[in-house]
Amino acid sequence: MKRTAILALLALLLTACAQHTAEPFPSAAQPTGSMELAYAEQFTVDYYGDAALVTIAGEERYLLVPEGEGTPEVADAAVVHTPLDHIYLASSSAMDPFQKLGALGAVRFTGTAAADWSIPEVADAMDAGDILYVGKYRAPDYELLLAEGCAFAVENTMILHSPATREQLEALGIPTMVERSSYESHPLGRLEWIKLYGLLVGKAAEAEEYFDAQTAALADILSAENTGKTATVFYVSPNGYVNVRRPGDYVSRMIALAGGLYVPTELEGEDNNLSTINMQFEAFYAGARDADVLIYNSTIYPMDSLAQLLAENDMFADFKAVQTGNVWVTEQNLFQETSAVGGMIADFHAVLNGTGEEQLTYLRRLR
Image 1: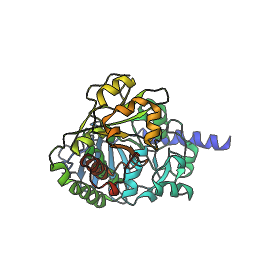
Image 2: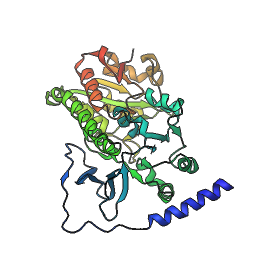
Image 3: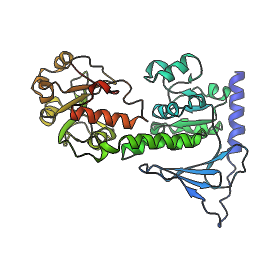
Image 4: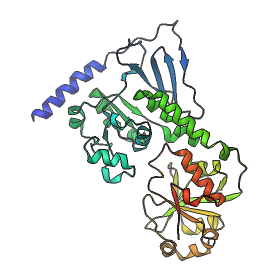
């Protein structure tokens, strides 16, 4: 009861503090510069001296102010002092960029259990107690977040379906950013969010360097002619439906950047707003039977052999890719290592061109 009473009191105090709104910048004030973004469209950064005004999706604004610097006044912007630590990463897709920046030490909380991480460094940090699991994003352990001094929360867009959770976090004085990297139309736009995360933890230069290295490594692939090879990414659900990545989602776009053509182009199945669609097997058969490359998404339902695939449906034996031995399976790290877009595109390029199988990181041949 005592902890609950303290929590309630803190909530009231912090809510009262949060009600003070800042005045706008003086009308004569102008940005001293802006972050150059090559692909990302879901955020912008304007600089006012040492402060950085981050705008997410044209709406949410966060004023990042280096510790010890004066705070410019800006309307409708949460003031956040950087570099941050004790961050709550409810968005699992944001974890890999922090790891690539050498900034896992700034992350104190996660909404993903240790057993569900395929990034070894994150699992090790959780085993060591350096990163704490605070429960699912819908119902985090608010008392633990407060007791451990959570300074900032990064959520994905699922939190939009649970607005009360965000309201509670902010009432407790925890600024909450909803990252929208999954809304980027270009795969390298998703990667470019590492620049924003670099700002949060004082590693802007390292983020720029990482992004530039990734894009430079892709220069030859992105300028190469299309292979004319067709490919699809899918898995078979227990009820027999085939779950297929939609044309135009970031995975199919990576295949296009790697020089491939994504199929099926016309999907008939369960309509939703997700990046995948459930299809009847017959519809998938008609659209993907002649695909040059099949890529089985094993993130949810692991697939270990061609025999196992054929056991799902013996009609797979008629597929061109099965007959030519060109069936591949994703490794578990494909979707959690979000900042390794360059490596993923390189793997897709190698598979489409039939080269460098021994150097693949995110795919392996199904035998």
